[in-house]
Length: 182
Image 1 (cartoon, rainbow, N blue to C red):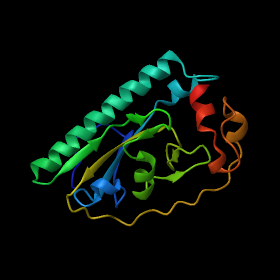
Image 2: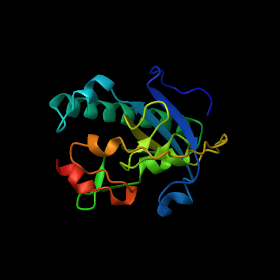
Image 3: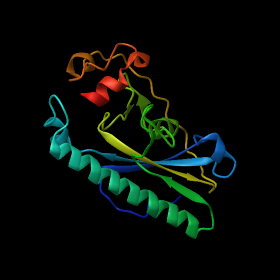
Image 4: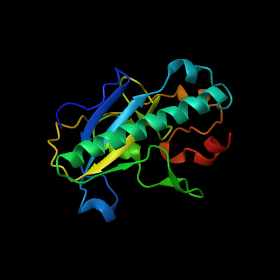
């Protein structure tokens, strides 16, 4: 894609990925671009038993920033004559099952930005799971650099640290509702 149209400092990063879109869009928008933003360590370190008002504000502002970046990237792709669709950073379409239009973490994993951790979040080598993501689906022909293959090393330190007790030894046993309701 060449130069990224937004200069945001070291905390934002962009990676082009492969086919990770929902089946209904795969034929017209077969590629995905994953953009991540590193959340403030100071804000997250202030969270103990539950999210703080400062965290909620930070989370909202970062999602707005990522949505804006998604719109700018999609617009730049459209200006080149290709289709593009930004997928909102945090838009739940089914509250009961906590499903969104697509899984940003799985797109980011396919793009080589990290691996899915025991907490069912994307874990980035540099920023850990302290990131938010947005995805741009597109029909622009992307040159995908070699994908990084992440190997998750068993780390048990997250189990006792989780304030909700939602993280278990196996990722499939992660208690999503317990995490959301604490």
